[in-house]
Image 1 (spheres, rainbow, N blue to C red):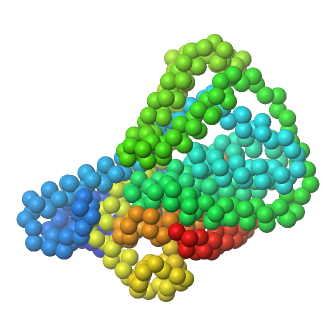
Image 2 (spheres, rainbow, N blue to C red; image 1 turned 120 degrees about the vertical axis):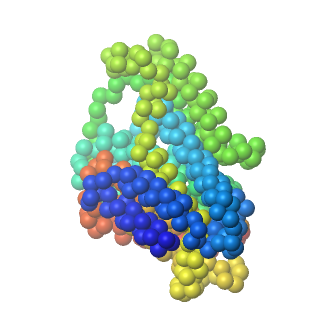
Image 3 (spheres, rainbow, N blue to C red; image 1 turned 90 degrees about the vertical axis):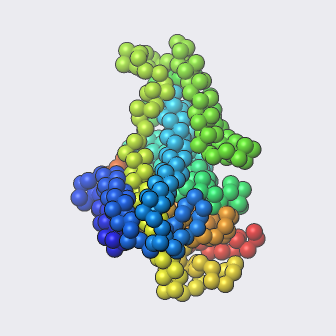
Length: 463
């Protein structure tokens, strides 16, 4: 039965990676795979020799000797435990996404556009790279990519040049997301899963992530495409809300407040995110009721928005398919973890892959294993890879392994355009060809990834 469950997982995984070829949204195979895996576990409960009790974090070797009712009760408890942990991540993401959409409702990101005063291609490259690096750490790499490419489309009309900028934005956004507990779904998973703490994550990964962004941008400044000045098209801007800047800083500040709330109260991060959302939504409702908060463009569409508050309008724009995909993939990986399959995989991986670099203790996880996880995240979505690593390895909180996994999985996806959420959304927004990215951008991403990994191996000795 274990072999059948693994086969179902592999087939579902394959369907997810071939999403663009088979024209089926990845959330569908993720949900189907999750449901079938748990159904097979329930049907074959008597045939499994071991079970991982997630509540007590222990592997039950004598699972086969338990009564059927005990096994059934343990399975239900495990399923509920994983659903609870997954729900923590999903509710957190929903809150963060809603805050970003509220900022956008007030045209808050137009404030960022006002920062760009130069026409030199290299300076604009650095401005967008730095903005992507900083913004992704605050509002997550996916959202930062959407925001910056939207701004890019308003000022750079030449698509051939714009897609180069988009490629560097992907690299910078993924690098920025790696060192922040709220910058990427994978780091959020590790943070909520009590594998990394905010202070150590920033300490371990800020410099490697910064180098992962700086090196590709530095190399790109010497490429012919970034020489000379850019013909920036000055579109006549609509009169924006007078609360635009206020909502931008309030929203970003509210998201940054979440890790502070967790450190003070020791409550799960989603609680702080809900508090932040409530505060931002309160100000949004107050500002939207003011006649001065509406621009001339808004007034023309006031009838369309008459029955919608900013919160309702923002919630309607949430990317729900992504939320359902995370639910499916995380719960499917939980099925493999519950059967102890991931632990066996971890042991065999350690036996077959040679050691590389220094280690904290004998028998520790090879650096090469973690680097391979990073490369794998370019081919396969990094969310299931990190979810699998949570079940594969048992090192304590803030062990260097978890920080290296956060870096590798977060930045490794930049090597292929389908390897990260930021890349996929940029591909959709700019219709970037897979092979164009592979030829033009992938080697830059690889250079940044390797330099950052080398920097991590140096900085970890300081902690």
